[in-house]
Amino acid sequence: MPIDILMPALSPTMEQGKLAKWLKAEGDKIKAGDIIAEIETDKATMEVEAVDEGVLAKILIADGTDNVAVNTPIAVIAADGEDVSAAASGAAKAAPAQQAAEAPAPAEAPASPAPAAAPSVPAQAKSYDASSEFPAGAEIVSMTVREALRDAMAEEMRRDADVFVMGEEVAEYQGAYKVTQGLLQEFGARRVIDTPITEHGFAGIGVGAALTGLKPIVEFMTFNFAMQAIDHIINSAAKTLYMSGGQMGCPIVFRGPNGAAARVGAQHSHDYAAWYSNVPGLKVVMPYTASDAKGLLKSAIRDPNPVIFLENEILYGRSFDVPKGDDFTIPIGKAKVVRPGSDVTIVSFGIGMTYALGAAEALAKEGIDAEVIDLRTIRPMDIETVIASVQKTNRCVAVEEGFPQSGVTAEIGMKIMEAAFDYLDAPVARVTGKDVPMPYAANLEKLALPNIGEVVAAAKAVCYR
Image (cartoon, rainbow, N blue to C red; front, top):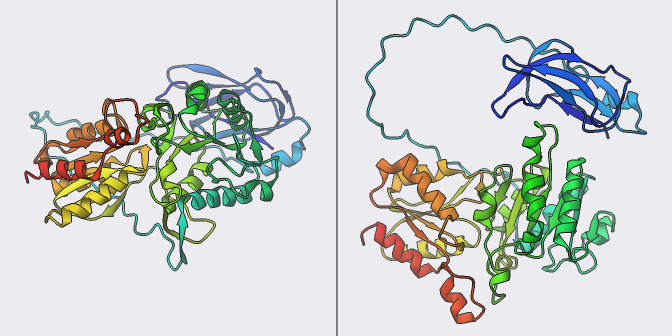
């Protein structure tokens, strides 16, 4: 397939530059490492180095073109053995030369500076409206989270031949949790690949495949085992786009169960939401319902960036309403107000929503009207929807199964303090997993996890009840 050469960035803050000169002509043979062009800004000049091999099929941006935006395709390479004329005609026909930006009108002489004002109350935030996510008139069916994830993968594999699935027991055994059931029979062993028990190995293969333009879905039997592959996930998948100046993307999804299940011990129960959400270059998704699992997984597969898709073993068998249709997607980075309320905001994600919604039902019986928000995406976090709710309720309780130190709820609380401190009538409260490795014994495991009673108590505390 033709390979786009993108306008690289000279620095993290560069937005556009001048394509000063082409050092190769259309039809020239290109090898990795060849210098093919020069770009410049008012601060520096840089040579553009080829990272792929083939023939320069089409130059899309001419010499001397100014104000070329970063990541704009500037040329197309036909891979070895590929029809050069077909690659050229299949590229953007003309990539017309960008118009030089008009010089801005002279600014009026500035007035004498006004005295510094005291910090103002933040403007009213706007909550994301998820009510239109279900297509109008679509048939609604009940579906388990397991089935929703399977359907999402199957639909995207039918839509795009570059999508494939790999992992331990995903093919012949139909998936350790039966999430990939039926995929081998439909798509064959070339696109549904059983791997050895070596996360470091198959995650690296997946990242390499993504860097060449394929779209792998890498399943970990549990994200605890992904620790074997952390170098590939963080240092290769997450950082290569930045380190290549925008020239090499990594469209890959790492998915599988995350967090506690039922008596599987500390080494199989860790919640990694906060770990991965710390890393620039990754998107981190953690759905609760089957519809969100399906819609967000489809969006993750289509996303040009690496996505960490955290599921939960306990939720796999739970059923929710899902709209029928092959093109149902949910946008990454948008929270959802699941239950409107006016007295206190309860925000959570993933299986934490079971505690948040259970607490809201219990609080309603005591006359406390809780608004419940499902973050759905941890990075990028839709904090504006949370702030909009806090500006209304003036109180917040954040809930997660992960550990308290440096957790997702700690980030939520800090962002509220930064953006909506003047709206708070009480400190932000957190309900988290206990700060201990997960016990194996059932009675101790229950004590180590959050529960509805703890969320109710926290909500009543911030309401001074």
